[in-house]
Each structure stands twice: as C-alpha cells, then as structure tokens.
Length: 180
Image (cartoon, rainbow, N blue to C red; front, side, top):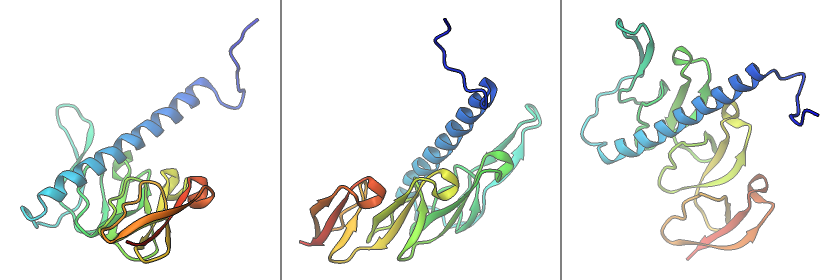
C-alpha cells in the first residue's frame, strides 16, 4: 500500500512552486534586513538618494536587482532602509518578479512588514501573520508606560517588562512594559 499521502488539489509541481516562492521571499527579506543593518553603521558615509533598479546582464540575459541607497518609496530587494524609516508594504510582482518593498518614515501605530527595522523609541505591540502580502506584519508604537509588547520587541532604556499574557500579540504572548 502506498503510504504517501496525495492531495489531488495540489500537484507536486504546484507544491514545489509554492515552496520556491516562499523561500525566495524569505531570502529577499533576510537580505534586506542584513543590508539595512550594514547600512545603519555607514549611514553618514553616503547621502545620495536613489531607488532600486532592475538591470539585464547582456552576457546572461537575466534580470537582477541593483542595490542603491534610497530615501523612501518603492525599492528592490537589497536596498538599505534609511535611518528612521520602516518597510510597510511588499509587492510580490515588483522589481521584475523579485518583489518590491515600500519604505516610509516611522510613526506611532504604523503596521510594518516582518524584517523591517525597528526605529529607536518604538516597540512591537501586535502581530498579523497574513499582513504585508503574507510576509507577516508587526504594529510599531512609541514606547510609553503601561504598553503591552510582543516577542522580539526591543525594551528601550528606562523601561522594563513585567507581567506576561499568553494571549497577547495574536497568541505569541505579550509583556507589560513599564517605566523602570
């Protein structure tokens, strides 16, 4: 008897395509975060605003994104997120199929994509696993006394975490943050 479970609605090629797409999105997200962290250390070195571009290599005939510094707006993977900015939208078809990220200045109550930088003075207060084109989204709020924070949220200087509620942050758990 065949012990492999088959799902008639999902062919092996569709399953592979879904996994490949998810892997590509995860790699793009990780690359954006790593490059943002690298750029944060050299933020003063270059202030030339630009946007991400797609170029085609004549030898290979393959489109690849070019990473450049950016100041807000839609950018391709690999473009550093400027200081004080966060990633708020993801377009899976942008940048010639590589996906495009929308960067904008941080503000209180803004939903950001998973992997977005967390601007100093902000904390993560809620999570939506299907937000940001199913990449996942976190709600950023300015820290204040008595705010509930999610896992992975920074705890700014002068504050501490106290009470835990397992139901907070869409079931991930939350901690009450108070002045130290």
